[in-house]
Length: 102
Image 1 (tube, rainbow, N blue to C red):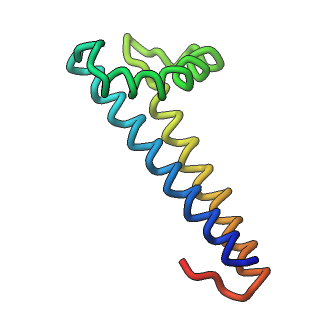
Image 2: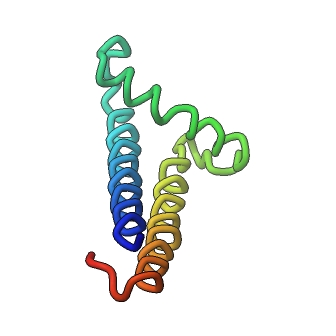
Image 3: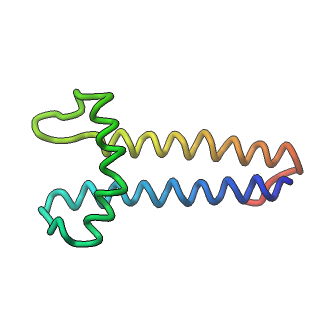
């Protein structure tokens, strides 16, 4: 059972890190005004824009001088999730079956 929890923790960590990089790339791509019909741009905006919109709705003060700081808040939230949730899953796996393999 402990290996299942370790596997879930690793997969969750990979997914969180992948989404963090998608957020970073999406934020960087806004600086160059890309073609909105490019499939990569459409994918990036489709995956990140709903989350950006929700953060902008909850924290409207993140738009400072024309700069949108919502990607920074999302990256910080991803890091907190990675540390807290994945870390606790590893601790749970250690409690179930000894020390987990990282």
